[in-house]
Amino acid sequence: MTRMLFTLTAMAAMVATSAQAGDCGSCYSSCGTAACGSECGSYGGGCNDGCGNAPANYGGDCYQSVECTVMVPQQVTEYRTVTRTAYRQEQRERAYTVYKQVPRTVTKTRTVNYNTWEDRSREETYTVHETAWEEKTQTYKVCVPYTEERQGSRTVYKPVWEEKTQEYTVQVPYQEERQASRTVYKPVWEEKTQEYTVQVPYQEERQGSRTVYKPVWEEKTQEYTVQVPYQEQRTAHRTVWDTVQETCYRTVCRDAGHWVTQQVADPCNPCCVRTCRKWCPQVVHEQVPYTVCKRVCRQEPYTYNVTLCRPEVRTRSYKVCRQAAEEQPYTYTVTLCRPETRTRNYKVCRQVAEEQPYTYTVTLCRPETRTRTYKVCRQVAEEQPYTYTVCLQRWEDRTRAYKVCKHVPVQKTRVVNYKVCVPQTREESYDVTEYDCVPEQNTQTYNVCVPYQVQEEVPYTTCKMVPTTVTKQVYTGGCNPCCN
Image (cartoon, rainbow, N blue to C red; front, side):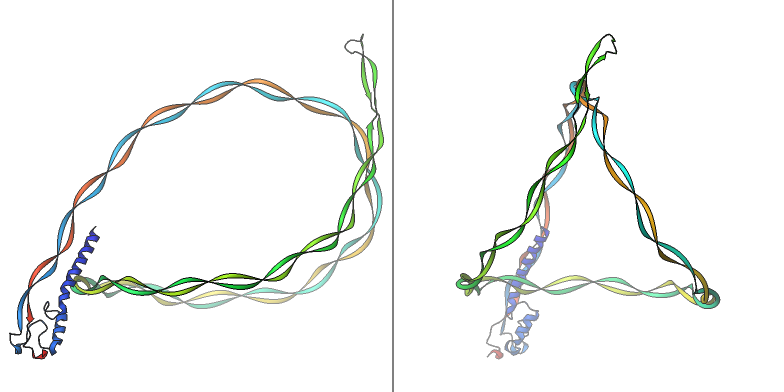
């Protein structure tokens, strides 16, 4: 709001100043300005003094005093009542319902299925491949390594240490206090007046022309090449696998036994005899034929189609858009600015120099010569004989015996114990936790931001035009020889 009021005040002041400055176009406006003096001084070859006053050598009948009213801008501070929205915090309460889960235990009955393992046994015949070893003899060559000692010599470098003395210079630091003075600048504020030029905007309508491009379509013809597909029949050979059935034989063991009825005394009651049946096994080896499918390959000729392409030139028509230029008049508004001179006061900070003594510490260094002893290592060459061992190889013929493993099938009988899973059921009780939803009323306190209207007196600065009576000297003519 304050920025808007300042902008309105500045615009009103600029309009008033421009209205006042508009009278300065003639030689008889406000006296004392440089513009008026320059124009009036050039009129008639310097016949007046630039302020509307006649020169002394022409008498007082050439000019006449006229009172006129000039509107002078003046800034006035006024107050207006502005309504704004303010906020205050209010504390309120509200009730809400919370649902809690209350657990309770319920006993239920269910049927459980479970499995019981039963031990059973059966007798079966199986084939076992037993290992039979056969001894064989093999002759082979072995590369036997042997060692041989040889003599050689090598150069050995032994370190020899020598002591040397060296002088070196060390910079030893020390501190020293010195006196000096420095220039301190203190700020001094001065008020100055400055004239500045403000560009006052105004609008002006102008006529112009612009180039408008309209699309114009033209038809053109273009030749293009198209690959036209065609089919060609070719002959080739491919490998075909045929399935041929072949009958083979394999040895199968079959139990060709029979049942035998026997009279057996009852162990619990020797006086009684019971009849029981007993299976007498008899393993028989039989040759059983079976069919094997084998794949046999053969070359088969076949014909296939190949899609090829031949180039073909065709013609097509297409449209091309060309932009045609056309001049079109139009009216536009231009915002121009006219310069306006104003005056403002500002403060300038000037720095005043002042000498101020101070003490500071300087760290200096003095050279000091010292001596140190160091060792230098020098390598001395020496020939040293040594004995080394060389590993060589020679071939020898050897013989070894090895065993070959063969697998011989053997029929055996065994009793296999296994377990059978027997399903059973039983009734059992279990506990289940169920939850009941119980409502509960709670109270909550919360803050609310409540708006309300407040009226305030706001100061603002406005520019008003105040009428002022000014006396001017008007040239009546007839007594200025320079104008004849």
